[in-house]
Image (cartoon, rainbow, N blue to C red):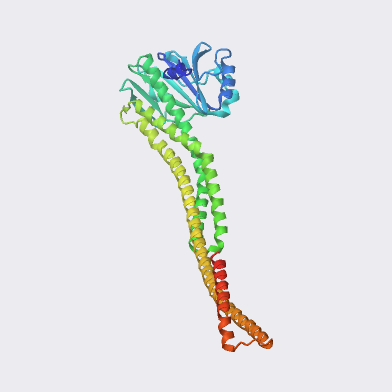
Amino acid sequence: MHPQRKMLHNELHARPSLYFDEPAHVFHLAFLGDNAQCNALLARLCPDTVAPQAAQGITRLEGHPLKWERHAEFFTLTLVVPASSNELQWTTLPDSLARGIEGHVQHLINAVQVVVRAEAGLDLPSYGFKDPCGSCVGGGDAVVWSDFRLTEDGTNRLLFINRRLNAYRQGRMIRRLLEIETYRMMASLSLSIAKALDPQLNEFDRTLVSLSERNANASGVHAKTLLEDIALLSRQVVSSSVRNRHRFSATRAYAQLVFERLGELRESHLGDCQRLGVFIERRFKPTVRYCAATEQRLEQLAMSVANLGDLLQARVQVEMEDQNAEILRSLNARADAQIKIQRAVEGLSIIAITYYLINLFKLVYSGLHTLGADLSAREALLGMTPPVLLIMLLILIRIRKAKSH
């Protein structure tokens, strides 16, 4: 059996829901943090009952079911506290849970309280919603109300009215509602980053426009300085993109989960009220689109800077090739001049050698004539011609061999 066989198969049973009957209070908390922070919190709430490496689990806190889950960059706690029909109003966190999270409140990213009750005897105005949104969910088997306004302690409140759901469907439906709120908050973490990047991206755009104009008007003398400025801008854009790439990717993933969970609610209209899904989508989609536009803007900036650098390098390369061609043309002209000079020197050399040979043979003839040799001038000339021609032929052969070498 493969060593990961059981672990991978058991992923089908990961992220279980809490199944319970109404009425009850459901408290859901999400904290930013890693496994070490999660272990520290769980050790305070329920020591000796949590496996350090487990991804999720269900335990009990003062007799009430408590579900905890680890995620990539956050962890959640969900506590279900049964309540009587007389206690179905908003309440505060149970003391045991409030004390346990005291050291982690600064990392709290989401807090939701859900009152779960039956439809009989419902007095909606008593829950204090201002301009609430409401939807029939689960094909009309339940109703959800909320105004999505935070209380003084930062809690979002949902009223869940069960019409015909059993404990299993009710648990899964409430889980979807809680996941929508948690994933929506996690996706919105990029909003502040995108807003902080906006002035920086504007400055990058202005710098890119300036560099493009300089590249269009600059001569090759300033290409090195321009290339250094383009490289500096490229480093800044790439650094900003790398720092924020993970956050923007997480926003896309969380947003997709939010929209999927909204679809799983199977909402329908409840009177003249705005549906929960419509309310969330209309106000959440602009955040997702703004973050996506900022990420795309970063990517386009990086591509534009890279293209500008390539364009400048191509222009510099063409200018260098033109310079090289000009140098080659000057070298060819110089070589032609040298060849002509060499040919002229060769001709003069042959003339000078011929002149000296003739003078040399003339001296020989004069010496022989002085010694009494009976040689006429004609005979001496005929005798000197073959050696002179032979010597000149040997000199020409040596010159050609030297040139060919």
